Image (spheres, helix red, strand yellow):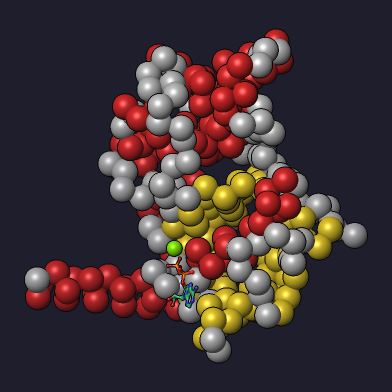
Length: 256
Ligand SMILES: Nc1ncnc2c1ncn2[C@@H]1O[C@H](COP(=O)(O)OP(=O)(O)O)[C@@H](O)[C@H]1O
Ligand SMILES: [Mg+2]
């Protein structure tokens, strides 16, 4: 019996014979973080889809708190405490920042009911704590629709934490952000480690470096190597995958 929160065991996913994931394995302790980097098409989003129950592996298993969740429907995986955040935030734009967090804290209710029911003292404390964690206290009465792109993402992360999820899957959480917003996002995630566990995927090494967590490199559906960001950066296979990509990008840019 392992004490992992999440254990991915030799997971292979095939789309009409094309292996999008090929014998992927890793595990994650409660409250910890793993980052996964890889170029576009490496299989990163497919891995998230597989964990959350949206894509079925052809072989391998996924254990969460020791029980097999490989074949559970997505709603059941979510009910058990895993949450996947997408690039487009799932916030309620016509509610204020504060109301969004209240709705998330009352996770089992429809939002219109959540806002009409009494807020307990414990829920109130949690809302205050989260407003501080996501550094949006001053914008608590602003409509979520009026937040800048970065702040919308932070609000959604805060909502997930309010809902008591124990494992948060973040798919390119800093996409489309300014340099400053990316740094804030990395700091926010780091503040939340321990409170919940994270799997963060991104194609950008510099962002992943700021998270300062163990890294797995995914390439063509396989884990190419694992280690600290420095170990990964100095790995010759990783260098050729990433350098190859950046040379391609430069060539495209020169042609455009
Ligand atoms: N539903 C699908 N059907 C067929 N091929 C898919 C499907 N989803 C993803 N793929 C393919 O699997 C590979 C990995 O995709 P994806 O997981 O989205 O990569 P990443 O998120 O790392 O950019 C890509 O070649 C993609 O075209
Ligand atoms: Mg992707």
